[in-house]
Length: 172
Image 1 (cartoon, rainbow, N blue to C red):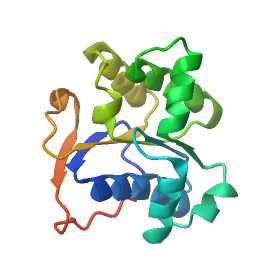
Image 2 (tube, rainbow, N blue to C red):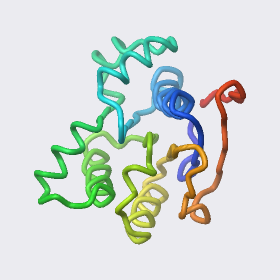
Image 3 (cartoon, rainbow, N blue to C red):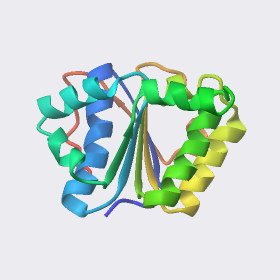
Image 4 (cartoon, rainbow, N blue to C red):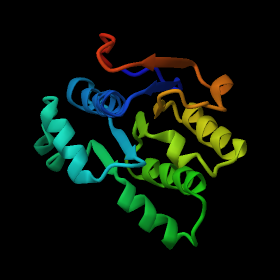
């Protein structure tokens, strides 16, 4: 079971960030029966599926299971245009709330939150975090290595990982 309402930021290199965030929702679904939402700010679904398969997370499982919703950079761009071109973070907050109405996920992973929050305000970040805590959603955000994460004080955990120094983290 996830640690409801916790917000964890992982700062690291590309492959490390993506793999850990995918494992977070995948393991929650396959091992704990939890619903999850994975949002990528930079990768396409095809790239995400390739990474999953490379690291033993069978993307076929997701095609037959409604337990994980996945959105990629292409979909986020289309959604932003449909919503009148709102900045990406505001779009993300609205999107998370809408998806949660449908599947009530307990795990949210946002790969490259630094990219998606670039034009965002602290009010939007606080709104996302407040929503997650109220709905008992555990959030895992990834940011680029050495990114100056300006919302550090709002998080429960901040982990820095470098390639080759991957900690033994098993999300359960």
